[in-house]
Image 1: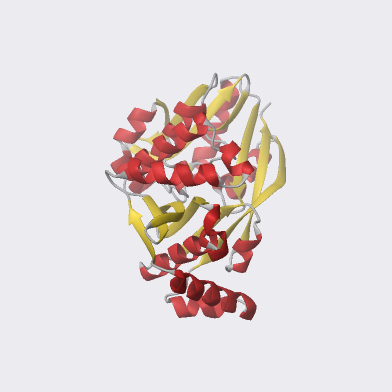
Image 2: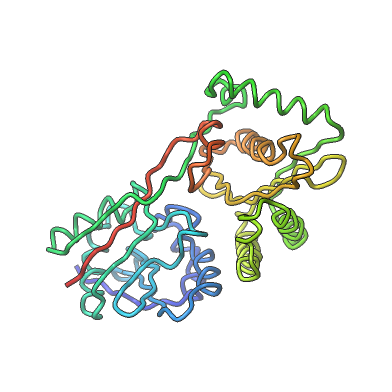
Length: 326
């Protein structure tokens, strides 16, 4: 078979998005070209962009979103803002794609492929690792973190039924206390032109949060969040939840609806409403809205915070993987 590995820019990939999104499997929101472009513009630094598409004739087989620093290639993205990463490949064509990619990297003088974070079911772990080993390359893979996710049942009552008795009682009690506290209103909004207005409120709440959250949102990170929100809104994926108490914004969630799943990306709340558990309840009410909208999965994303387990989240192992190409 004859293949062509073409050099891409973000603009060329995005302009071909209507075709590529149907023929390649984009495993999560974090590997979409629009997301990666925002990350690159914010954090790319001195690395060299290394975007490659493998084609057979006019048919795209796979897409490699890589960056190169010295002799090491890695995914575009970083673990602090991209929960897991992967290649985008036509299902069933993984072997063809990875064999050509590894040969090309070696010919370009790249000695190591450093991939992280990876889901246990990523194509990098399920396909690339064995292909690299069969070609005689050294492969080192290690557990790195966990993400949590939940398969959503069809109804809210069925969701409550899967919780432990104590947690189910706590969810109902906290919700009842919220509704009895005053005029409380929650809504999840698919953001469009009003994205800046919602982001202003979200970032203001973020600045009121505990010290580590406030320090995380430095000026560079704030710029990234604003650009990311705008880019995701433009392709119809951004969804923000807002909980108001007596018409005052008390808590917000920032998430993305993609491929039947909701990704809970970040959240913020006003500590003056701590007594009403607004941070937790804003997440719970957004989860409830996802069930009502027919979403199939809720992604709590990376990190083992206790509330994720209490709300039914199940662990998804994340790994790092280094392939020594010699």
